[in-house]
Image (cartoon, rainbow, N blue to C red; front, side):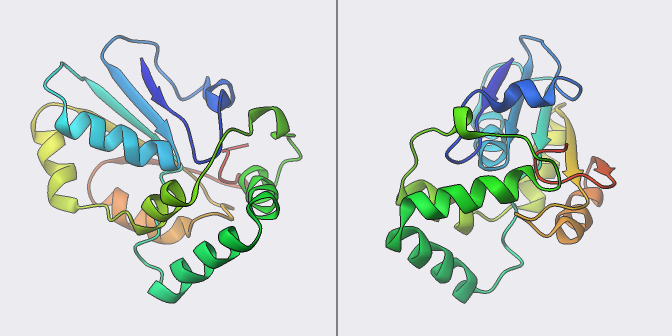
Length: 169
């Protein structure tokens, strides 16, 4: 399996053992990593049977001012931004992600917030034979779970976890 980490994270795939499939033909990603996983699968010429999107970062329903504000907060104090981000990732659980914090930068955050999921590209990947599964926590404090669910459920299989957040815990 090829796995893509979330923004500012490393080794978090251990939290998703129940959703991941260990296969040479599976690609998976969490949050920002879900965007990267999709792009990898979409552009790949290798065999991919399954794409697993764990709490895909979905911000296309937000106004441009939201994105500018997030980037401004990040520039003002990267450490505080990352710490608040980690709190929101684990909500409503009390899991400590400090050991999973990894290097992060402005460019990655900007790419994460500006990414637009394209329905036609998702459908094209499905037509190529890739099974796409999306996992969303109903209590997600990072993305609007309702909007994300509305978008993906029109296209593929979506699992919506009640009383769980971005980390699906």
